[in-house]
Image (cartoon, rainbow, N blue to C red; front, top):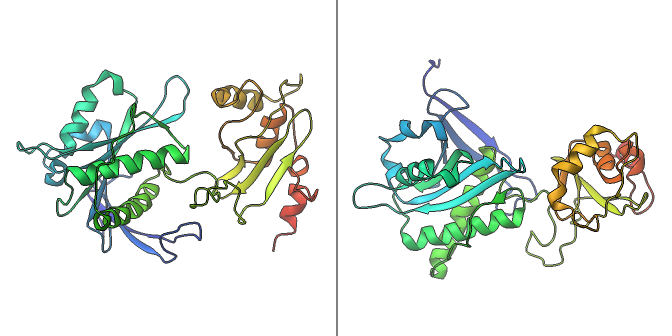
Length: 316
């Protein structure tokens, strides 16, 4: 029986075929430090020396007595841009200091900085054995920042690319293993910052950039549009490089107009989409593309001319 205080849960994370690390389950321990899902969370994983914390900005002062937050580590500041309403992230490192100040002190510095008023939550990674030195945290900061940029999920607020530093191949192997576990934890905490919306051959290490066999590509070629989309676990994704219709018809739904306004910063002067955009439904995606009311089950078709609706109905 649990009281209303601290609570602990075990979560099974079954990896999909898209995850290149493993294909078996992972046992993740999530400790609700304040007894609520909206409060601080500590995460550990079986056979891993890493420790992760999710800390709401308003709860930083509750962490003053935690010794592992006085160590070296990597932190992520998550928030939303006031200008564009897009999700933003800042990736940083903190080294332990002789006076006992480390990650938490760095977060407190950011809280006082008016240039970083956008963040509402921090995620921190450190280790149970205080393993990280200056070389390790520099390598991790560089890799995490590059991965966040490559995934195109969040606007990365780092002004300059962090320096990677020099690590031996043995140390690099250890750190890459740490990164794979950290990616799992980050996703469990609700931030898919390292996961591209669509898995392509380029995100799997191939430079072609083509869509993998897992996804069937659907097309719209009408009203001046030449768009491509795929269906994933997260919805219907209109792909980067799609050409959109330029002008809305008088009866265009507000949802399509609002979506165009929301994503106007990633549509160039030739109406080419510059990043993958997710929609909850095929019709939401097709209305966005065509700037008119649209039935996505009919307007999206495969290369063979099969409508999305018919394609769905033939799935076993």
